[in-house]
Image (tube, rainbow, N blue to C red; front, side, top):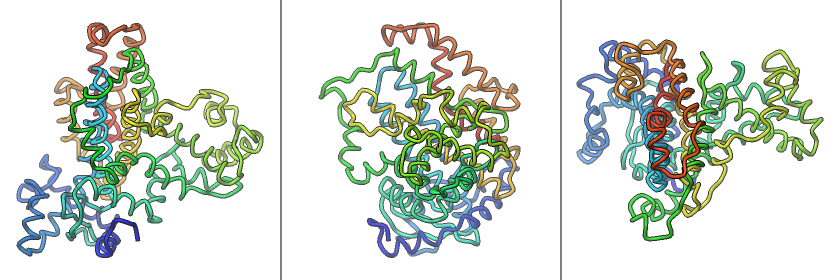
Length: 443
């Protein structure tokens, strides 16, 4: 039993059902056709946390069908909200405000966890939480507050065999899930341990908040200039934004192809170390043989001289992308780049959350067109396109990003004022991460 969960909570969490969440999501179709995620009379439409507390206090049974639908709908919606928090974190970073960026990055990470859990049938609220059962209806159990329960539930879920299967199916390269790639390694497939380590690493800020609430409160609520100021040059911020977007460039039909390629390479290297007991650089020939076998099994072509093969063996783009490098660091807030580490961990967790939300809709038999009302509204409200001019496919939103990155590349700002004066329009584009959520949702 996971430390921190009571026996009762552990038993309740074990009742969650991915299939049941798909059933609940399928029941959303009649509301989606009316331009809504849930029904107008859904008992949890207005302040679900408070309604759950009132029901519990009055010893009333929950509106089980309504609650199941609410949890299912919250999977995609939490993911979008997480990308929105991430947008504001990027904006704060571009404005020279690392403290606000850290605060917002943490909440992006939290929303990523809530989205991922909801897509599996675990609804985290505040004090009273929900489990979607196989029927698609939900039950309620008592637990901790949102921040604590989010970590406890995530830690519980990542300890289940289901989590490795789910995560392994979400990250893909050349159309094949990452666990299929590892299935073809000659020395064995250590994916279960690697997948669990992803969640542990990318949710580390949630874990820190669980163990040390005071540190989270200090970061979120304490005056920021009572200690030594931490400066990060605007030029370095510009470079970070360019690198961040380069890793998230979409491909038509595969919106996370680039970041998934980086994740696959890192995973193959981890798997080699786990199964061979040495590093790829120490035994490059055996590593190449293993990568060739994995590539042949996944794509039918084991050559390492094409673009993908050269990338996976670091013959091209040899450096690890900054997204993964920052995510792996766990420095104290006094380090100038620490807020970027939080942003990058949130990015990777949200990549999984977006994938899980999309998989939930697929499982429910819901198409991207059925949530088109939501995609259109978000795109127009976040100024991603002019009303009536929605791009098709949504990956065409990358054109704005590419142009903005070209503008940023032309300047070497000596101050944040200079960065804003010369690149205001470009910055408004590259701090709009909601477009990632939308082209992911429309895939």
